[in-house]
Every structure is written in C-alpha cells, then in structure tokens.
Length: 207
Image (cartoon, rainbow, N blue to C red; front, side):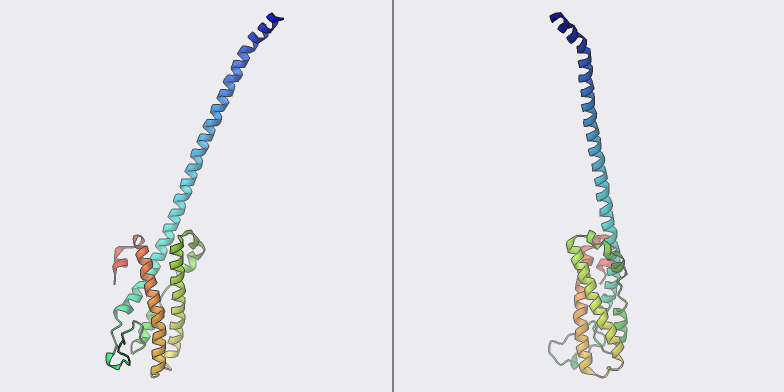
C-alpha cells in the first residue's frame, strides 16, 4: 500500500508542477491585464481632462473677445464724456460729466450703447457650467447688467425725440443710464483682467 502511494505521488508530481506553473502564469496574466487596464484608464482620463480644459479655454476665448468688443465701445463713451458737458449748468457742487449724458450727443451715445452684443452668451450658455464658479458668476452678472442697460437705453431712445426739452426727464434718464453703464463697465473690466491670457494685450490695455 505504501509503495502504491509513492507511485501515485510520483505520477502526480509532474501534473502538480504543471498546475502550479499554470496558476503562476494565470496570476501573472491577471496582474499584467490589471496593469494595462489601469494605464489605459489613466490615459483615457488624461485625454478627457485635456479635452475638457481645451473646451473651457475655447469658451473663455469666445467670451473674452465679445466682451472686449463691448468694452471698447463703453471705453469710447467713457473717454468722450466731457464732450457737451457744461459745468456751469450743474445744479450741484458734485456735478460730474456722465459717459451717457443725454445732451446734444445723446443720439450717438445711445446708438453706441445699443450696439453691445450678447451672441456668444446666447450660444455658449448651455456650456457655461464647465467654467469655474467665479467665472460663471461674473459672466452672468455682466450679461444681466447688459440686459438692463439695453432695455433702458432702447426705451429712452424711443422717447427721446419727445423729451429733448424736458430737463427733468433728461436728468432722470441720464442718472438711470449712468448707474447701468458704470455697473456694466466695471464688470467688463474685471472679466477682461481675468481673461487677459485669452486675448491680445492691446485689447486688454486699450483705454
């Protein structure tokens, strides 16, 4: 019986060796497969991150160019606010010129205001969530302010011809427009400063 057991063990040794070798090979295969899978997943994640970041930058660039265009128009108004301003006619000591004052140049100023664009905002609004919270907040505030400014500007443009001699009306509407203008102008400057890497320096620095 003892000899039989020895014979059986002797016969099984090659089989056991093959099985152990097979198990080792399978284990190595599994480890290699997991390693390759991890590398592949990492590569996919990197491509996704890179693609998302590129998409973010594209969106930033589009907003930067539209807002720089709008800001160039607002800077024209800001830079020419002394034209037509009559200090002697001011009722208050703190009276200062307004970039949107409804004086003899009211028609030109209103036309410039009404040329502000929001095409990029309309197109990219569904993708704006990709940007950082601070960016989204500033952009949303900017275009909300623009909407208020344009609504008031267009309404005033319609009523202006009937109120050119109405000093009280002109003063009230100038103050209304000036509040909207200053808010829009300030937000635009903040956004361009934030996005200065996405547009030529001359568009950022131009005053």
